[in-house]
Image 1: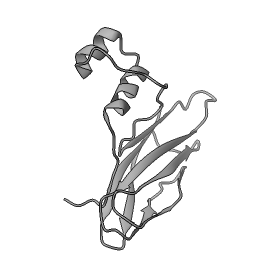
Image 2: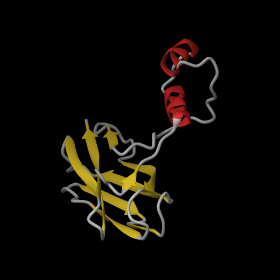
Image 3: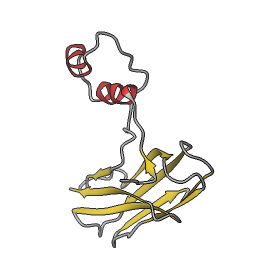
Image 4: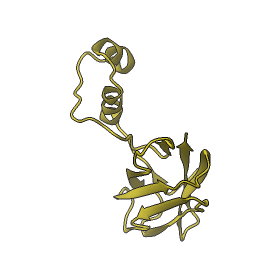
Length: 148
């Protein structure tokens, strides 16, 4: 298994995520098995290799969402990854930047995935963001849209 790119996370990332879910002190202690931790910020995202955007079709809430992710090159030293998406009808998906260029292993780069739906979007849609490099590495991430 050699994906080329990984979405790294550490213990603090999970702590922030659990804090953002509203876990109590007792629940936090039970899950992380520590008596002390810090919640520095209200996380909106976990640096996880999947994405889900949930939209309410019955109100005027925004029908767009941005996701920020950080990936680490674990493949070849000199690698350029290109974002590939098959976008279904009724949706717009953009990745910025759409190319990630690395000059060495363990380098990190961030990107933003923006999803937007219109009134023609289906109720549930699955697509994949694929980062593909010149060495045949493919890092594939599911993207799910729910329009209820």
